[in-house]
Amino acid sequence: MYKILTVKSAVYSLTICTLLVGIIVFSGCSSSKQVTRIDADTTVDLSGRWNDTDSRMVANKIIGDCLNHPWINNHGMSTGGKPVVIVGGIRNKSMEHIPVATFITDIERSFINSGKVRTVSSSSERGEIREERADQGESAALETVKRMGRELGADYMMTGEINTIEDREGGKQVVFYQTDLTLTDIETNEKVWIGQEKIKKFIGRDKFKM
Image (cartoon, rainbow, N blue to C red; front, side):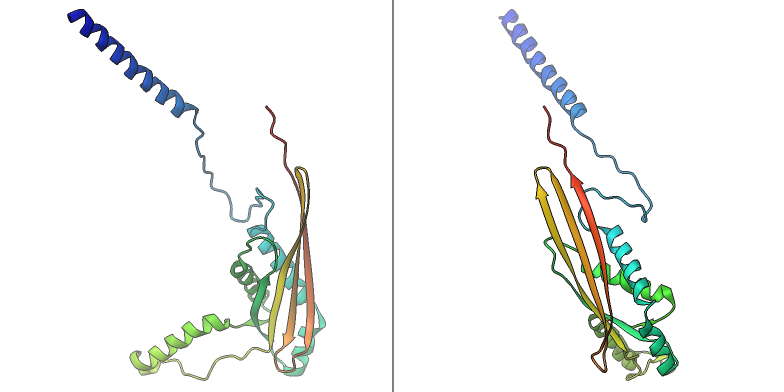
């Protein structure tokens, strides 16, 4: 009886050891995730999709082109001041998800950093600001209250859209992005500038080899 129990205990211990060794080996073979911090301006293109670099690059180039056309000088000569611009709706008509809000922010940043135009808040942002102004009228000290009816009216509105064309064959793919932006005189409805920026990406995928 003692021998039988000893054999069973040995088999049980061996089974436990085998399971532990298997767990250790499996854990060692499983892939681990490695995270490395990189500079935010570094170009990293993993999937070939629209990314932060594309958004920033297109905004800088297309606004640079916008600010080097006659409309801005014409405005200065007729009014003696900087034009006031609002960035309106920019539609994503592509076949993939593009964070348009980030692209709009990049456009506004390019406008503001240029120092050539004045940029005002969008309609959605103005709602929150107006609520704050109304709250100040009830709660803030009189000498610090910001008055109603003093908002800066925009002279021009920028609108546009982003489109894509894809060409795919086997493990290869070409993605073409086209961004079209239009600047319109709000008072006259005249289009004073139309800009376009294109990006073409070749995406090659290696076939899985045994």
